[in-house]
Image (cartoon, rainbow, N blue to C red; front, side, top):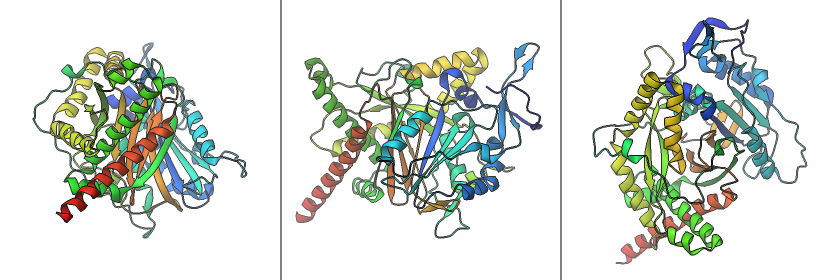
Length: 460
């Protein structure tokens, strides 16, 4: 953590870290977010640097350093302190051979190495890598790396989108659906009685997995296909994506068990208990216009890490009916939808932090995560193509690393696409590309089943 005095900083702008930011800044929970931006044009670093000078660095978090002053020989509470920012120090443009044989593999290796490089706490905790690299889905690549202590996924995604504009209207912010969260009493069966161990599957993290270089892979599927299933079965997009995840993991585990070829493992496929930690946004309104202005005075939205989490059981096992995965997803989500679990988890964490301190709080959160198998998230993105400082984007693929899970699955909608991102510990999941393909194939089977039944009903 940065502790040396910086003559350029403004102590007037000092602000204490939020409880969750303190969690993400602890040595045992040092998390960062990476946003992969696939650009439709060749990279123009000067244009992006100039754009960032007029957007991102104007935000307090992206122009502050983390300071922990010494008081009476003891470390005080960490705080954000405003400082002068030289954008060029945060922009990395690697020298890449234009004749590289496998650019997709190069990109994957580059990102994996990036997960092992600690961030420089002597300056604001963000950086952007601009790769003049033509891949299968883009003419060039941008990699935005942000320390998780700066904000939660929704805050950071909103700020990223506030730096973009519609390609069709360079003066207009992107259009993003507003999601209103509701938390109310229900059959609460959450925090205390959910601390048990998941089935020991090939997906379960090993000790120290947070320190292992991660592999980031993704696939792009049709948003129209997801909506077709949603409308036919009268579900939500989240229900469908959760069902696709359950189906994909079932396919993946079945293949892994077949490869292991032991009767014990094959038998365990019938009784898998697997759960995901899902981060829930606790803001009342996530419209992009409100979020872009969340730091303004009297804003209804707050900046930073403002989320709770729920532990969501996954239904894993081979089904003869592909739609069963989606039905079970809906039942599971409906049970949790109006639960106070997310609100309670945040309140309980704050209480432990206040009473027992940061170390005890970190131990608690790590224990909960260690007793689950994966992190699952789904973020709504722009409805139309957007441009990032002169670079129209073909896809956006965000994910996170540094937490004690071997598997993170993230869905990001963008235009008429949904990007499936898998972040994996290769010592646990050596074939994340196959897992991505299992998700894609699962959606195809679910869609085909919907269409077949629709045709049958029409014939009747």
